[in-house]
Amino acid sequence: MTTRLLKNARIVDGTASEPTDPMNIVIEDGRIREVGANAATDTDEVLDLAGLTVMPGLIDCHVHVIATTADLGLNASLPDSLVAARSSVLMRNMLMRGFTTVRDLGGADRGLQQAVEEGIFLGPRLVICGKALSQTGGHTDYRGPYDNRSAAWYDQSLGAMGRLCDGVAEVQRAAREEIKNGAQFVKVMADGGVSSPSDPIGYLVYSIDELKALVEIARNFGTYATGHLYADEAIVRALDCGFECIEHGNLIGDDTIARVAREGIPVVPTNITYDLLARRGAEFGLPPESVAKVADVREHGLERLEKMHAAGVLMGYGSDLLGGMQTEQSGEFPLRGRYIPADAVIRSATVDAAKVLRMEGEIGTIAPGAHADIIAVEGNPLDDLELLTGQGAHMPLILKGGEAVKVASSLR
Image 1 (cartoon, one colour):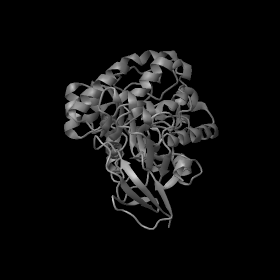
Image 2: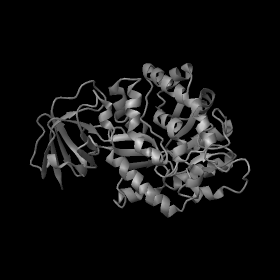
Image 3: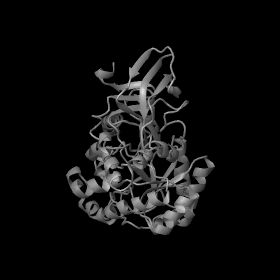
Image 4: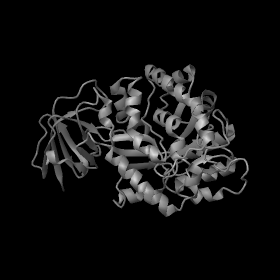
């Protein structure tokens, strides 16, 4: 059984405004065994982290590892083998940015998850929903107004972010099938979206009966439903139907902010994607009609971020980037940092993100029993969130499950 000692670790996890005093961290069999000023034992390896800031591995609560291009209609038609190969590169790059766990919100399947678990693909721990569920003409229906061919093939295409299902019986079957296939929660397109052609923002897609049926299936399987949601009316409707998480939430109203804070409903803002889509969406393959939708949600999302923080809403870190834009995954850190305190931004990718994923104590923390997902950073991110950007350039150490993904020669 391999043991490793990390010495002189000044820990930052977003729960305090300053790093801790130097701590020792003992890692055994992929888990953290002990943390403390005097924690020490005979170990197989010792790394001295004096002068560095030590953090839990970062968590991105909203990614699409199969989104190899921003043109999601094209992505859905690509061969599965090509999508898997490109996804392996996207996931490896995420890990090398310090993201040791990511929550995929549509597309990644049990096969990709297993490839990471078996070490075939190098990437973050994957938490998946399988295919997102959408109705005909909704988000993830990429056919456009002149194409009425069947989209049934979406169900089996690795490059398709979602699948189409209409009516209570169909949505029940689709939800059950995704969970049977390995989905750990249910993702529902409960509002219109930017990347699809037929559904404006604020489009009240599924019926109330359909939404309630989806929630019932998720709960009966011991999990939850989360919704792709922008408009306040759509968010309230989803909450009334029993949804337990909100993705995006750019147009959420003040009363609804108070409600989600009171009820403990997590929100996962994804502001970096709108910032990039507005500036460079066409360059990365986003169709013109989708670029035109971005302005509807871009500025509101940042203003709502401040209000949600002030109200005490549980917020997870999310990027939601597509294709070549995924290199900007860490850009959400400094972007949020212009509106809310740095410790809150970091917490959204550590302790609070673990709560969103319902994995408290397992990830997002440096504590006994947790997975040994640990990064070391040159400098103090509480003072400069840009240290978490740069494709991991400021991270001389990245551990996932106790295994060294990256160790700078200066630490050996």
